Length: 628
Image (cartoon, rainbow, N blue to C red):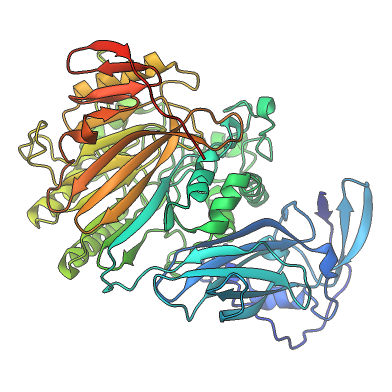
């Protein structure tokens, strides 16, 4: 059912209420200190009349529940409670009563403009009998009827269940599950994480999100970005053939556009299940705003008169603000720094075992990137000392966080950086004059060198870089080529490991319909051309899990046989081990055998075909297909 708000018809008196406006974090997010972003709660209260409450039967929990950014004693809880599944078209609504246009019946209906009153509670038991925290909050069209609260007074490293309901009614949300992190000085023995990136709605179903739910195999979910894509379906995808058209069906620019696009993605049942069962720790990549974003623009929108006219009078800054506001409204994420409206970089301590550092290498303060028409120019300046992926403030925070982690004795440092960190020659032997991906760390080589120097010079080890973005899988020793000696056979000289995962549905860089043989041929060339890359796969969509203990860390990569139908199929395509203190992939890498791609010095088995890259032989074998 779709509705459209018209102008309001009357004013209201301000009354005292027991529900809280300020506890709904979305009224203060992403920044209450920036008038163009923040929402004046005073004005919201004036135009919303709590004396004429909604009929609970006319309100719906339209997009499930979610939780995220877990701390030892608190976690963020999210839901949406609305009279319609459609999203608010603007932030300009006034007091009293409004007319709603019902597009299904093609008639106008007068409805109360009261705020929606929502109760929440969280407990250790599924019956919610032993309540740890509860509260009552308001939401309204100003924040697209979203609710985001911080549940407090919780115990560390504990599983909780939570639920929302419309005030004084039995209209309840689905029951959610979440988990707090341990305290920083808690000596936990293991933790498991699922790592995702790059989910493009028209390219397929988000089966990967649901597989970790079906296995119940992890404690938390890390999302490295490209949660949505801003494209029109016709530009990028085949949504019509599988009934997966992202709405609105055009390239998105306005606040409504971004709200509607995220809402459309959140209708995928496996994504809903993942949010409902796990606490998420997300960060954005570029497509949450636009393709190949940088500090002052993107590949599709730059601060020029031509761009401004072509894109309907939307400026770079306006588009980014719309995207950022919608993201914070819809994602279970904390506002990190209220004086820094675009900051999303932050860190989490998971006991003495892990420090997780989530960077923003896309939106915050990035120097100009490859915008497709300027590749030669970016190639010429890629080693310029002035270029930065993060900006000085974030970079300084990053290095201080790594130092503090080492000083406190955390076993592992996990760094979520969206884009591939390792040097990657992609010329495929074709004599390409620009063989690197200049939109990744290869386009900011001095920034990467500063990071490597910080790790090597301070002898900070057990570093695990995590990446998405590339729609392919890469596993590398973390090395400073040309500056520090490195033995590819043994891994000596490495300062850590990088795990980069494929997209949930986003197509392979070798093509959406690339054959297995062609994808593996690309992978074999890439592995041979790059001494630090030990495994690469371009064929499978999927994800990976990290199972972490004090002695070793295991990365398990999973490939999905198909994403054009909803299913629970997956193939374990490669497993890797990193032993604490060794700062390199354990040899033989992946135990010497993987199911797909190319493994340096090892065998590749896929379906009923095996490729032995040590001697080039092919023979029949068998691979198991897991059905969850």
